[in-house]
Image (tube, rainbow, N blue to C red; front, side, top):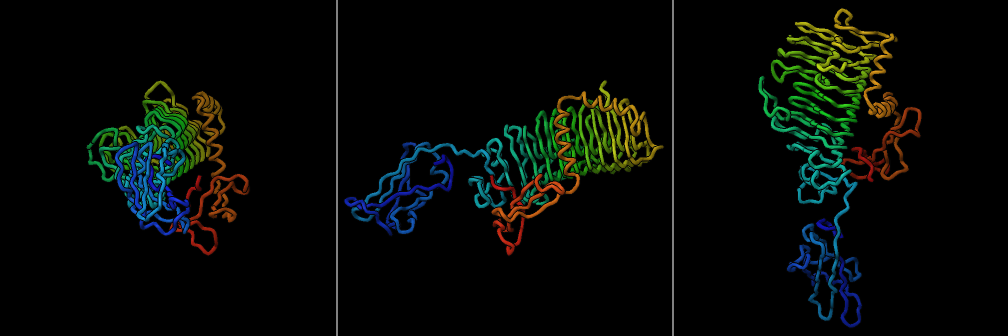
Amino acid sequence: MFKNTANQKIIVAVRDELSGALLSGDAANITAVISKDGAAAAATNDVNPTEIGTTGFYVFDLTQAETNGDLILLIASTTTANMIIEPVQIYTKQSDISGHVWHVAKTGNDSNTGHSFDAALLTLTAAITAAANGDKIMFWPGDYAESLDINAANKALTIEGIDKTKCRITHDLTTFGVKLGNGTSLKNLTVYLTHSPLDYEVIEFGYEQAVLGTNVSNIKIEDCILYGAMDGIFLSGCNNILIDKCYVSSKWDSINYNNSTGLIINKCQFYTDASYGYGIVANAITSNTYYTGSSIINDCICTLICTLTPTSVAGIRCSGKNIINRVVVNVSGGDAIEGSYGIIAYSETSAKPDIILKNAAVACTASGTYYDIANSGGNVHLENTHYDTTKTSGAITHGASGAIAAVKTAIEAAGSHLALIKTETDKITDQIIEPDEYIDTTTTPWQLVRHKKGDAATEYSRKDIKTSADVDVTSATQIPGKLTEPAT
């Protein structure tokens, strides 16, 4: 028996005290008391047990509180003459919950076990406290007004919503939405700032991000919608990060990764209106210009529509080493004091930024000084990129020129994390072409299988097919309602 865990049972037998024969039909006459760790006994919550068929064996259902002890003693008795019930003594152990899936729902209660939808917890915070390293927390539609500090919990957890548009973590200007820990995965959810800041207003500077990460590694953010006041995503001193298929919006930087390495951004949309306040430097994507960073950015759309008068704005502002492929960048509006940029390589340290930009379209328009492409003291190389050639600043190389080798050498010198980047990039490249999929009817439940185009042996994912009532789909007569992760 697991300690402090609900939905567990104790079975007793009613026997004739002389012959030992089992007695059936005696449930209404049986009661019990329970003692934990030698404390005074109290009546069980389950007043009368349930008989198993007509066997003479009877089941008591225990509450979580009734199992919260190292030694559980259940003493049952019957009012039927000449019948006896032996007491039951059980030593409990801590529940081994590693690998569990925890459920959170607006209909839940934090005193529940959390191990199913019917026994869901009410808050994500309670689930994080209860979960073990490596667990998954699934939460059901609703607004959860919580600020989640996964880093403080010191656990590698997956937080996943059932429906990313309806499963929302809300936060206000005094908190972050989610603070990442080592090994955190966020999937299929929304983090949403409940109201916007006033012009000039800075409330709790540094705590206005939808997602915040400081000195953590091995992060995945997939299929999420993130709205932040200052930043949508802010990463400092982080490494090995994958951001995939996300929409990120903010009023300052959509994503700011300073002093962070091994960042892969794939198939995302970034938007900012630079309305956090006057005099800011706003960007759709930026690696903070005072620190180095490295990234691979694939298949993204970056939009910055400015209505105020910031110091400077850019669609993508890069320090460090960066490979950017298949992006669309659009910057428009406003009169930035120090200029508006589609893409700029820029650093305020001695480290020179490097950008390889391929298969891109970049446009920047503003009422003041503006450039589609700019290089401030680094290396910028373009291949198959569409932009206004009259709107550039600084040295820019094109095509297969000799400069490309120097840039690649500089990138390779960035550190051992590039081996991981290459591995992850190879995986992403395989999936750029939409995969094939089929329904596997040999499994229970049926599963939707996605695999490499033209290669069924190389599977990307399997999802269980359920009805809207969470019933396994096992025949063509059932109507599929959702896809879920296969049970482990």
